[in-house]
Amino acid sequence: MARPVVLVTGASTGLGLAIARTLIAREYRVILTARESSLDRFAVQGIRESEQVWLRPLDVTQDSERKAVVREANARWGGVDVLLNNAGISLRSVAEHVTESERDMQMLVNYSAPMELTRLVLPRMRKKRQGRILNISSVGGMMAMPTMSVYSASKFALEGASEALWYEVRPFGIYVTLIQPGFINSDGFEKVRFTDMSQTAHDTISSAYYWHYHHMEGFIARVARRVLATPESVARTVVRTLEQKRPPLRVPATFDARVFSFLRRVMPRGFYHWILYRSLPQVSNWGPGRR
Image: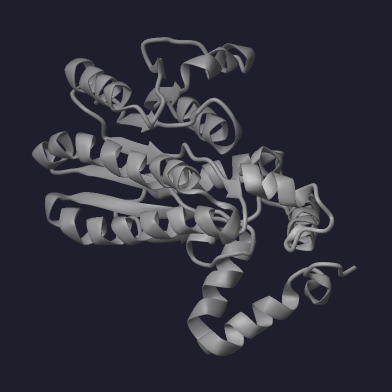
């Protein structure tokens, strides 16, 4: 029998690329997507089109492109068997430094777009009475960090919608899973974007949030360079999960994600937040004019 069809968004770099390689090695039929300007990255990584592999432009924020790739999958391969929503962006900003348009863009990429792609693939999955939807969430979807408020908001929204969807589509034999990576040893932390106001505050030592940005930035960089989790190890977790007969709703995909998941379950909530606050890097020095 033909191998399942897997549609992967944001597949040209980072975790998406590691997932793509793992799926190709296991001989899945894959539709690897990225923004048109990023498609040449596949060739650089030695990935080329074949009967098994499609490379398609997809800006997940564009309705016409979302519909086009799903329509082609329906016509040529009978539909998408596994939707893997990996594409995402991350804004580094305190809540005060995010404008409405920036907030909308963060939510569009990380929440609205994956839910719209989900809506497009579900009719064929329901008809077949089987399917998998895997949404790449984050530890930021189970707990929030300072300077990452709008990013966490987008992942919290994705988690809530995915949980509701888990109940809705189980009667049709469709399983929904949230993959929750924590820190990954890669250059991903360098691709976090500042908003206009957060960049100004980051560069201005007299700003109220200057030390918030610098202490958190340094902390994230140090941890990301030291952890054992890699894009490849998380990709293996993703593929193992989609191959399970009854995959769970949530899968913590790194050691720190498992630790935080455990602490949230066993600690009184007030004590949990107190511990995390006291663990913030040099938090006693945060604030204007502090060192």
